[in-house]
Amino acid sequence: MVPKIDWLTIRTAATAGLIIIIPSAILSTVLIGENGSFAWSALFAFLILLGFFVAGFGAGRLRSDTPMMHGSIAAMSCYAVVQIFGIGRRLVAGESINPVSYPLFLMIAATCGIAGAVFADWSARKTARMQRQ
Image 1 (tube, rainbow, N blue to C red):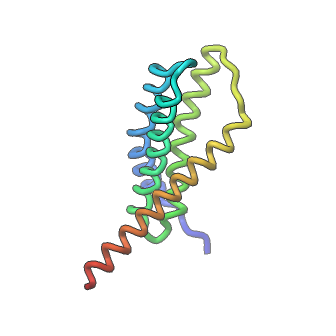
Image 2: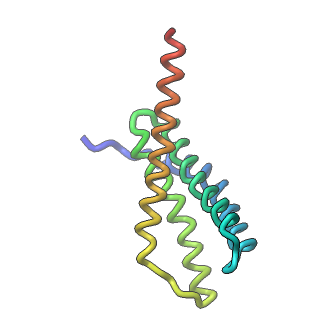
Image 3: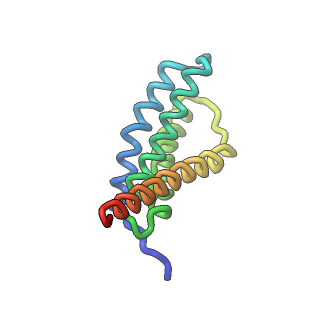
């Protein structure tokens, strides 16, 4: 039997991730631009990956029966939302679009979401174990 996707959980968890991702993406675009330092680029990349992790963690907490599936979908949803606006901005600005990179970054987002969901599942199991003792 195929598990049913809980879209309310996906939306809630993705919103939590986007609260971190959107400001980080905007700040990185404004502050770093094309000639930014490696330290700033690494900081904003970490914050964006953290946003994907948070989306996965939230989905994993809300759906303990299928945490990894919901975590990966929530993180990929965050990525899709950000990329829709990013592609639109690039098209308006007349910049080039590199579609080859999108599947790679989508898988990175999914991996971060799964990691967040695994952490949520682990922490829930640990809490349940401690409460039984």
